[in-house]
Length: 84
Image (cartoon, rainbow, N blue to C red; front, side, top):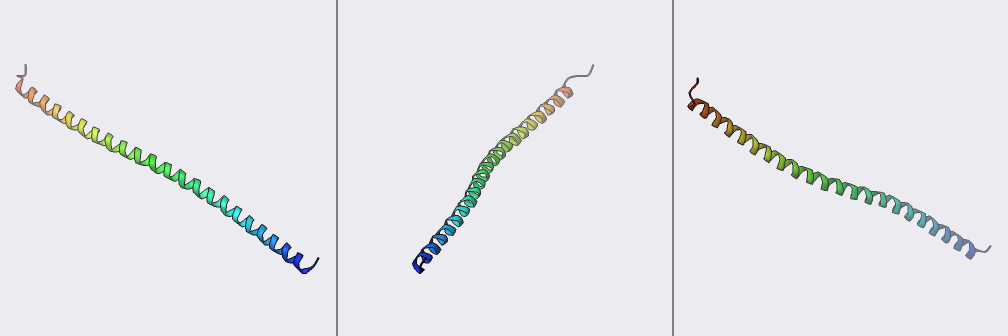
């Protein structure tokens, strides 16, 4: 084996190591990308649930106000109706 063959073999080994490093980076980045997509999906669902919670709280406040109004009307009616 002469010097040119050794140099070619060394270059081939170096290219193999670079390919291995790039493959490992690809696998790592693929995992990070999947995690980011999962996080994005979770954030979307969290926003949807937050909007639903706001709507439900608003409806609850309106219902409580309606109950208070009906309670006041009942008190007024009881005051107007003579007790027997």
